[in-house]
Every structure is written in C-alpha cells, then in structure tokens.
Image 1: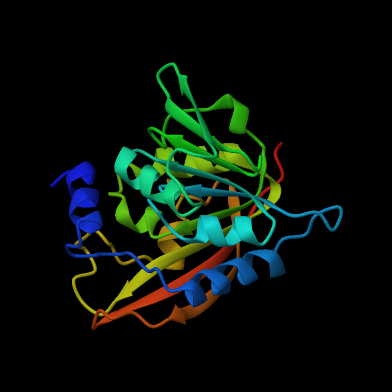
Image 2: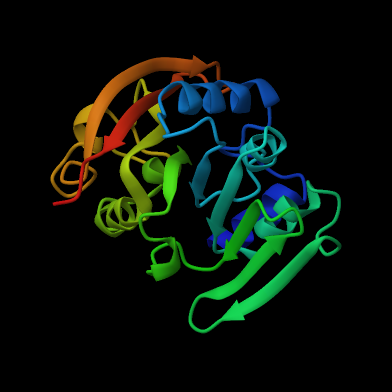
Length: 227
C-alpha cells in the first residue's frame, strides 16, 4: 500500500496507524521545543514540520502564535490539515511551483503547507527555522532514504536550531517497520544527523501509546554552527 492509499484508509476511518491526535501530546511537544529554543528576542518561533500529514501540532503551534511550515506529499493529508483551520479552501491561497508541487499559504501569514516531495531541495527554506518538529518521520523511513532526509533538515535549520524528534522504542521486531525502532545511536550515525546536529538530551517516554510493546520516546538535538 502506497502513502496515498494509506492516507485514504486513515481518513476513511480505517487503521489509524501512527496517528496521535491527543492535544496533550502536542502540548508536550511544543513545550519541549520552546523550553529548548533560545532566540534573540521574545518573538515566536519559526517551526518546520516534515512529513506532517494532518498532524494537529501544526494547528496547535499556530494557535499559540508561532509561524509553522509543513511538508507532505499526499494531497488528501494536506487537505485534511487545511480543514483544521476552518476550511480546506477558504482562507488559503495556493501557488504551483515547478517540480515542487503546490504551496498553500494561510491568510494569517503564519502557516505554509508544501504539497510535494520532502526530499526536494527548496532554496527558499534554507537556514530559515528556529525549530523542527519530527513526529515519527525519521523512524518511518528506511535506512537508504534517511541520509537525504537528514541533509534536508540540516539545510533548513538555522545554526543552533532545535530538532525535537519523536521515535518508537520497540520491545520486539526492532528491525522491522515502519515504524522502525530508533535509538540515539541511530540518530547520530554519520549517515543520519551526526554530521549536522549535536545530541542534547534523551527525553524518555513522552506519552503512552495504545500499542503494546511500544513506547513513544523523544530526543532533543541542536544544529551545529555552519563552517
């Protein structure tokens, strides 16, 4: 089943898989991000959400005054995200970008949704974000795709930016996925975030999951200074 079919099944009420819509989980994530992100002023943060689907973190962070950009390949997921803001069409402006898909901008000026390939390089996003929220994206990718994903996040993060990442800790079947079992050592491999980010802290279990034998754990990484 491809990602488009997977999302159709989710949105039609099928197996919800990795989705966590509990607002408390989004509040936990945003607090970790704000507590670990230092800016030059009291201004709100620019936050990137890669492979976001219709994750309610985007709406929550926006409602708290932050500027949020999300990227996802599946049009149905991006439409569901827009609907959280009251409508999938009203209040939104879409612009096609050659080889990059559609770019949706909210009338508030603080939400941008890219409907296209996360791995596609977007020069306008380089060195732009104070923080990155990654819920299970890294852990959903096979090892051959992870290097390009990590490179792209490193491109878009400002020096010193916070990478908040949620991953699965599995009691069994650790080599099988998605989702795959992920530890600090996986994140910091030379083919992953190791060349671009420092590991700051392991957050342990963030919130309970309904799946037996699996924990939702988190890590804080910081973007190294560019040479």
